[in-house]
Image (cartoon, rainbow, N blue to C red; front, side, top):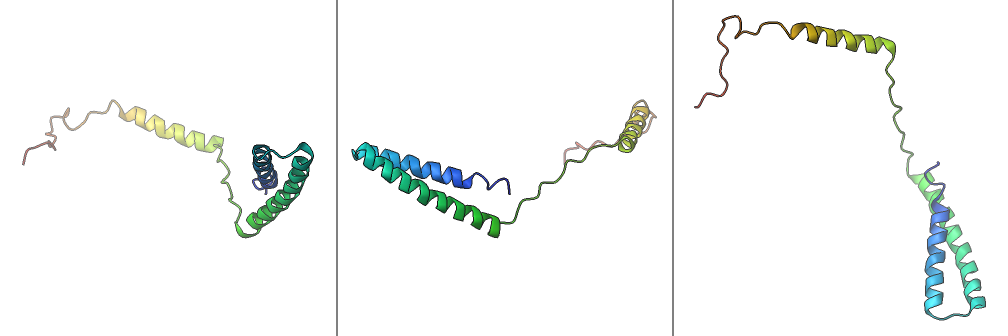
Length: 108
C-alpha cells in the first residue's frame, strides 16, 4: 500500500527528534548524544516497520471509486433533456389560461 509506505520514516524521525531534544536538554556530550541517537534510530525504525506491517495486515485497503467520465451518449441525453426544458419555458401555466391556481399560503 502506498499510504503506509511513509510510516517507518515518520516514526523514526519523530523518535530521533525527541531523543535529540532530551539529550540536549540534559547536557549530554556530543559523542554520547550520537550513540543514543543511533540506538534510538534503529529502535524506532523497527517499530515503524512493525506498525506498517500491522496496518497492512489488519486494516483493509480503502478502495477509491474511479471518477465516471461522461461519454458522448450521456452528453446527448443531457442535451435532449435541456432542450425539453427550454421548450417548456414559454408554455402557459394554469393561471395564464384562465384557470384558478390554488393558493397554498392561506391562513388557517
